[in-house]
Image (cartoon, rainbow, N blue to C red; front, side, top):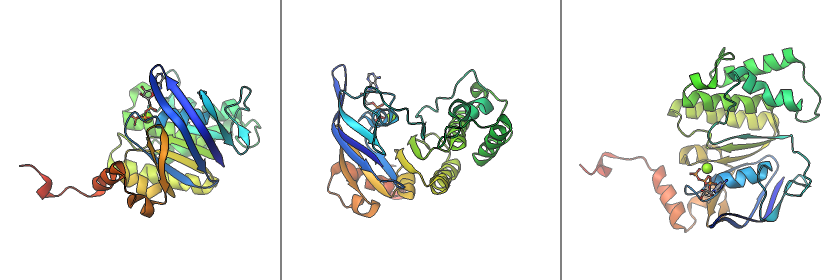
Length: 252
Ligand SMILES: Nc1ncnc2c1ncn2[C@@H]1O[C@H](COP(=O)(O)OP(=O)(O)OP(=O)(O)O)[C@@H](O)[C@H]1O
Ligand SMILES: [Mg+2]
């Protein structure tokens, strides 16, 4: 269970988070929507514990990640918006990194190299990058790097998974495969997932609940059906974007 209480964060003159509250239940997939620049990535970085709020608290299973001496939450992984692979490591080394660093995310016990190699190979196959262990990130396309970053998350198998734009920039077929992978991973790990996306089709495919991040807060939060009925201009625009374009929409 993730509990975010009255979170405030300012960068220079930009007040990004303004008393944000959010509770995410164990086992749920929460999708966060919101206009570009509202602070969705900032929020995820706070949950990961890699940024500190000006005010407010975040508890993960009763451990405060915002305290001055937080326990490192090893049982959590994040797919960063820009993939964030380590450029100097091969795809295989990237995918193995967290397991090598932290061991088993639940017990902290080290995992033998041969076992890590096997897990890396399986995860790369799952994301459609079988046999790409020795490639360097710079030699892959943007979509392939994103899938490699997803493989790194799947290999690690944390029970809290944060995804920042997992399908942006991917072709629709790969995007669908990634969404299926997110669902299977969630089920297998019986995890808790927070997914930030601009992709409305993915949002509706994945979400148990949908949240709208707006004006520094979670302005609305509901199950997908109820969410679409909320009387809010942004939600209504998002709803419109779900309708397929037709010939009649073309201006010429
Ligand atoms: N480290 C930082 N230093 C200064 N400003 C920052 C920093 N990180 C984020 N910001 C600012 O915080 C605001 C929110 O950024 P954030 O990246 O969270 O937006 P976002 O909602 O994820 O947008 P997008 O949908 O485009 O990814 C922006 O104005 C951004 O410039
Ligand atoms: Mg972002």
